[in-house]
Image 1 (tube, rainbow, N blue to C red):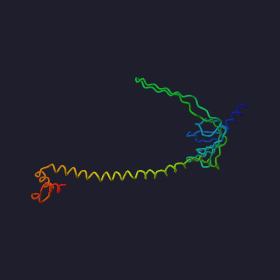
Image 2 (image 1 turned 180 degrees about the vertical axis):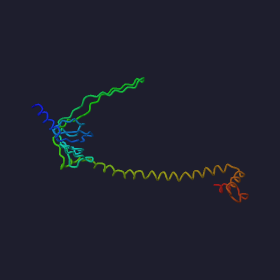
Image 3 (image 1 turned 90 degrees about the vertical axis):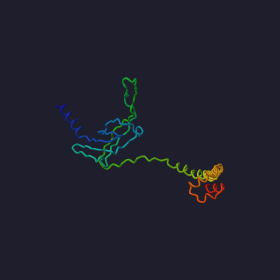
Image 4 (image 1 turned 180 degrees about the horizontal axis):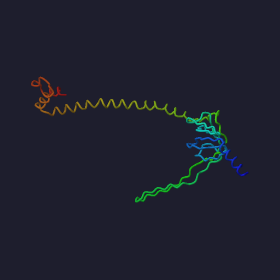
Length: 210
């Protein structure tokens, strides 16, 4: 009779115990107070406390509260016991008839935590860590105008060279026309629609065509 009542009391304690479904490091866990849980490695140091705000469900006896998706004001408090590595997992890859075989081992970095409290309402959200170190980048941008001033004379040199090229081309054209005969020059003048070709001399034809 004593054994039956002992098991009934233990069973009732399990049923009436408060529990929560909480998201920790990308995984969902069903936790109770004083329960040990192994989660993905946390940034918190050993021995320090940590709070998880993303509580999806809380059960307290017959009362069940479901979040949408999380419950406002709910929080699960825990303490980081230690950091460790999980059991080794062998990853073996093979391609038949190719001579391809690769064997790798992996040990997941874990953190052991103990659930200390489950709060259904009234908890304040933990503030996220702020990232600093953004000031030095502004000093680098101030050096840009100096480069623009040094590059300015190069553009002027290019313009001078560009202006000098057309005169050279005109000289080449006049030299080619001077080698041609008067008949050839007149044919070119007719093609361009120049009038009064019959009375023109060679020099006049060259001047008109250039």
